[in-house]
Image (spheres, rainbow, N blue to C red):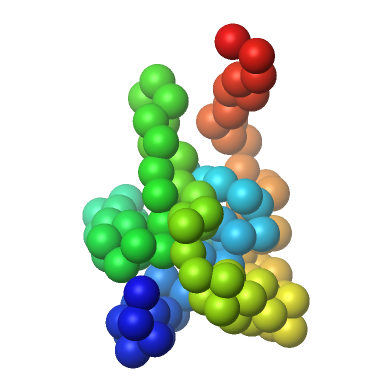
Amino acid sequence: MPPVQFYKCLADETRLRCLLLIMDQQELCVCELMQALDESQPKISRHLAQLRNCGLLTDKRQGQWVFYSINTKLAEWAISILSATLTANSEFISNNLIRLNKMGDRPERVRSCCT
C-alpha cells in the first residue's frame, strides 16, 4: 500500500478509532464498534467498508456476525505505525473501551482449533 493511501485512510477520526479499537481487541463486530463509538450502524459500516477497501482490515463471517481484524498482510511499516499510535495514545480510545466493556450480550467468538 502506498503511504499516501495509508494516511488518507487514517485521516478520519472514526476510522482511526475503529482501527485502534480493533488493534487493541484483536477483532470486533459492527455492534461492538457502535457501542464503543456511540455511532449508528450505517456510519460504522461505511467506515469499516472504507478500511477494508483500503486493505487495512479483513473480515470473517461467523453465523450472523461479521468480525473485523487488522489485515495480517499489511506491510510491517504500516503495522508498526498503528502499534506505535495505539501505544502512545491509549487515552484516545480509553472512553471507547469503557463503553465497549459495559456492553452486555457481546457476540461470542468461536475458537476453532484442530477441527
